Length: 289
Image (cartoon, one colour):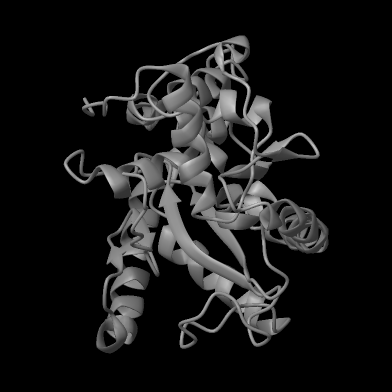
């Protein structure tokens, strides 16, 4: 259980929500403050009047310019969303892909013009490294994959390229966190809840939220509202693939070993195993935690 900081009043909750979003130059509407409020579940009417607002968007003192910046990024994000949806239509033809999520700034429609497009790919059990080969080949074939050799996620060289930086299989949907590192845990919780599913073959979004229920310690309102989108239990997936599970396990292990040996000289902070792969994990220092 995460220990909540002393932010019990609605005014402190409002300020905390704005302070976090300000890290990403992202002003919030009153409805968004209610949805993303940290640690509390106040109704909208509880929040006090806030003098620093423009076009119904709230911001911190001296940060009025981010209102126009949000509108500018909304336009550039629209272009990236069209591309993401178009690419997902082709990737979903790979039968081992269970779901595709847009993550990062684009999930919030707050993507700068030169940003890449972050994808989280969910695969059937024992197929992650087989699937990754198919995804990489497809993206490279059409020259739409961000080169892993480029450290930046925002430049003309990576603009609108796909960054497939996170793979999970259906048995590894929980993203672990360190409750003692509140800054990174809060960031992960926000990333999990803001991720947008653009293809879902097997009710994965429901399972992803439920299996990361620890996020409710940080963003209880956003978690509660997300769960409400999935009132019915998900059916048991992958019944056909279970028949081939032993063969897939062996093939996946072979492909994992081959890719690991290829990547090993270049690995830094990546976290990889048979069932998950976190490439380019981001460690942020948030100014309000």
